[in-house]
Amino acid sequence: MSGQHDKTSVAAVSILASGGMAAAKFAVGIAIGSLALISEALHSSIDLVATIITWAVVRVSDKPADDEHHYGHGKLESISALGVTALLYVLAGGILVESYSRLREGTPPPTISAVPFVVLVLDIVVNLWRARALHRAARETRSQALAADALHFASDVMGSFAVIIGLILAAFGFWWGDAAAAAAVAVMIAALGLRMAGSTVQTLVDRAPEGALEKATAAIRSVPGVIDVERLRVRMVGATTFIDSIVKVPRTYPIDRVEEIKRSAQAAVGKAFDDADLTFAAVPVARDNETVRDRIMVIAHNSGLAIHHVTVHDLVTKLIVSIDLEVDANMQLEAAHDIANKLERSIQEEFGEDVEVDVHIEPLEPELPFGVDAAPDRVQAIAAALTEYAAGGEIHDIHNVRVRNTDAGEIVNFHCRATPSMSVIKVHEHVDAIERRLRRAFPSIKRVISHAEPPRA
Image (cartoon, rainbow, N blue to C red; front, side):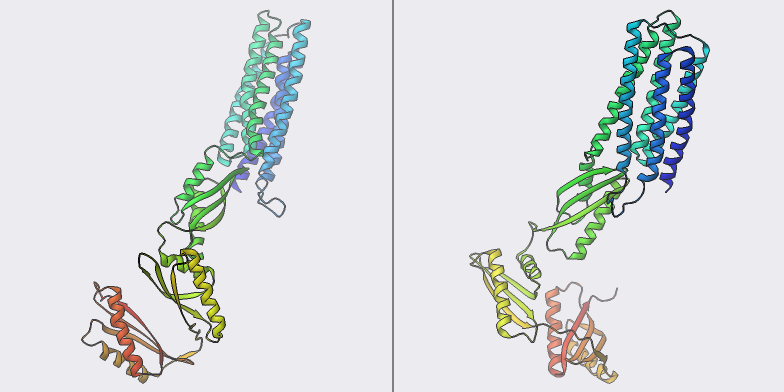
């Protein structure tokens, strides 16, 4: 809200300054009969109208998006700037017509005194202050309306200098000096309008800001996990940069990892732009370094199937794939076989008809929400057996043994330690041997879950 307060306060002060100086120049211009001074006064009057419009618009443009304005209200500033541009062209045309008329008819020069020079010097000082204050506020708040207002007042300084030159020429007997100065003011107004119209129209037609596309693309590509940016569109609405992106991400990433990439991209874009709103659409694609196992896991995931123990043998001439497929334990064999065949066909479509696929169907491990801790003596008996089976082997320090009774049988969890340099497959072989001996000794055990870790430091 502080940015909006700065814009409205600067615009309000500008209104008072515009009104006072326009009235002073108009009164003096009428009094001495100076078309140049009257033209500059009319220019200031247009500036006054522009400032009032700006003051009203900036109070609305910072309102957040709503149900009817999904991109906020920032473009009201561009519309107001376009309206002011039209007023400037009307004024410039009128001044040029009157200047030509006076030059053709040889209208007498204005009455010269110190008063118009004092008013014009004061006007220059006030306009320089207003232009500087508005330019600073426009840069800080990225307000197009305030930037246009600052440009007005900067042009007023040049117009005042032109009027001074015209009055000096008239004082030295050049009767055409005042009308020529008025024509110069009109040309300055027209040039200002052309400059304003160019930037305003570019915003209204959603022209991407200079360099914004490259900066946004670089920010998104810097995020780990992003493969490439497929498409990116940028447009400005008020001070906000809206960025629509379609981004390639690895298809093997889970949804939560993709969501993390999206959040990181939003942070990167926010750092590159002062005020940015990013729309991030993720497109999963295959990476060049995907393994056969990765591709098979993607096929199963896309089919909503649970698989494990995926083994791949490359015989040079063909691939042999073995998979364990888990299905509902109560599913009929015919239905389960259809699922397995469908999975096999999907893999063959991916790798070619000559790939050999063997699918082992097994019951999906049921969730066991109900269970109670086993009696202490039962836990001690199983812990003692584990310690005995591990004695003298590569696995040692059996600890944190837990036993739970469920409807399906006993579930045993335990931790153990092994040599840090031992390979995972060797650790698995030794632990698996212990687990098999434990299930033979205790037939009621349904499952054994072990956690191997290196020795304590």
